Image (tube, rainbow, N blue to C red; front, side, top):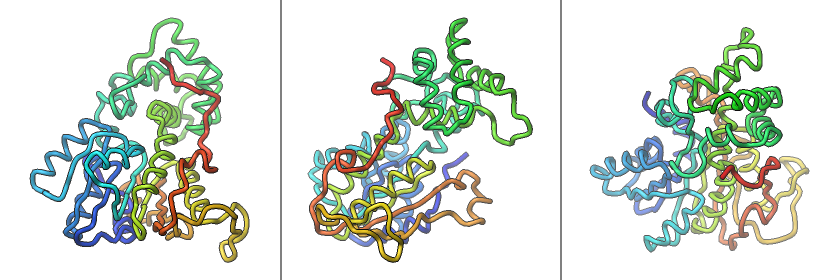
Length: 330
């Protein structure tokens, strides 16, 4: 299945690419946003991805698109990555948070139970895999990860079943894990979604530290954007959307509480962003019908002011859950 960019028209409306501008696609994937941005204006796009397969796709595209520069690395370090290229300010940053269709559809990457493959889930092919987590993490920590990142109500039952099974033999494949979870919760019971869906989501987000990376990416974008530059973020998970919402709210000088007509202002640094989306932009019925993966997508955007960057989001009030697990499995 080819990658279908979600909320593409809305992303372009918020980003407003223009001639001679510099933009960052922090999550290149298959180039679903980069290609239309390059087509919309005579601009330059720095395509960042930690996935070597995505960078290979970007390098192939760059052969026919001279305005594209592939950059291997994490978008949470985009300011440092571009500084190495002598770029200190850009006009736009777009982030599509989560797993790409290419990763889901390739069984060997281990992101999905739709195809059997090694239990991996690493976007960057480095560090502990999902198999390491499932086979080594303490039961209580495993349950917390599944509950908080997957919002799985039966997390304790699933964690207990996984710990009991791994005593007999290690988990090595996606279908083995999915089958064990399905037996632990008593099957589908008429539900359309597979019982392992939320657990797989939780493991993927934990393995790749997706919430931590998002927080770092927001801070890096704040430092990198020039005054008037736009930051556009598309998320697919409630915790991700909440993090982005909190970031824009704090950076625009608004506190929690107050109303949308009279937001409560907070004292502190000058606002570094002007919020462009009063509430999250959601895909319409036509898009979700054509692309079911778009159903949970939410878009938020902001325009950089001339005020200095606030600093690390986590150190300035943006909360990132730790799940009681301070380190990944070694």
